[in-house]
Image (cartoon, rainbow, N blue to C red):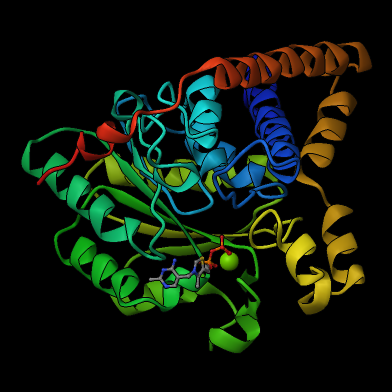
Length: 324
Ligand SMILES: Cc1ncc(C[n+]2csc(CCOP(=O)(O)OP(=O)(O)O)c2C)c(N)n1
Ligand SMILES: [Mg+2]
């Protein structure tokens, strides 16, 4: 493996942190403690981590309704995240945004977005600003397969192409938009094919292979940074849970997906695959995994304690932090 050992361990640890944060928050939601709705990214961790591994702190990322993994991968503070899920004043949006509206400009996380496809034009504008200001900053827009059927996807990429903007469009193709399979809603096999219409490179990678994601994203990020323009990267992946966390509970869950399909993706779990590879290469040992797990567990529990102890926002604060 060409990447150095510390970096490999960082990739592994970040994926595991996302997994454990998502699991814990899903449990707390189902227990009735977390009032914010949650779209879990369990199963998709390698995409967020593989892409963000190529970014500097001042590079920017826009996200979606399924944002927790992206924010953690970009260096977000899980205490502020958990407090926001609890709708506490100590959270990222002072308890007024919940899961789908977190942002952290200090690390270039320009925001999650509840509107499908809503992040793409914002990210494109940020990339335009960087270009006009002569910065060598790169922007990444994350979005789902469903978003590629929105006008904003096509308009954003068209503009980015004609203006040669420093941006990478990353499609997390998890095969479904809520219950609609891509085979029904998208007339081409690979979303990356859509890049052809805008004269930019389009590549499809295995989103369960963090090194493959990282390598492809690295090429696209470097291209953007050198002034060679935008790219479209499609990562094929899968969400293990329902569209939103309580889906199984509310809808009986798997009615639109078969057990065979879910199990075949779980058999290629990104964290397990990467862990095995690192063990075979002597980078990881069972003891090391146990100590990483213990460290992550402590961090996540600290975040829960921080969230539980925080005050709720006062009703009069509802009108603060508004533009008008
Ligand atoms: C503009 C808009 N239309 C519809 C919705 C309702 N909605 C929320 S998530 C979603 C599906 C998104 O699918 P995809 O882009 O593939 O992302 P995924 O949930 O799979 O991560 C829809 C239709 C919305 N939030 N915004
Ligand atoms: Mg999807």
